[in-house]
Amino acid sequence: IDLLIESESNDNEVEAKEEELEEKENWGIIIENKVHHELENDLNDYWKTVRAENKIGIVLSKGKTDLKKYKLKDGVDYISITHKDLIIQIENNLSEFFLEADDRHLLFLKEYFLNIKNLYKNNNH
Image (tube, rainbow, N blue to C red; front, side):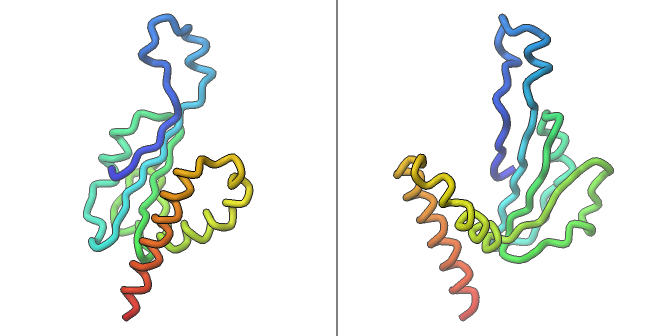
């Protein structure tokens, strides 16, 4: 798993009540990032590894990935997104969060945009 984003969990807190744990959302986003390689990873294994009730898997790559050929088991939910589509969507939504965003994070985001755009530009030559 290249990146895993999960909800906060209080499973390790000794004093947490069982009812409070049940009320908390339990979610995870599994991201497999592919830049210069084909997808050869066991997405079913990644799915089993993440212990979240609500989860989704994302294959992030330069081109759309046909996930049908990876024999995903029932209930295993992955989607394919290109780096380019991700950047376009973030740019469209950025104005909503721009003023509250930490300037350091915006700098990292801008660097990510530039790197991905260069990756696509260099690929076309």
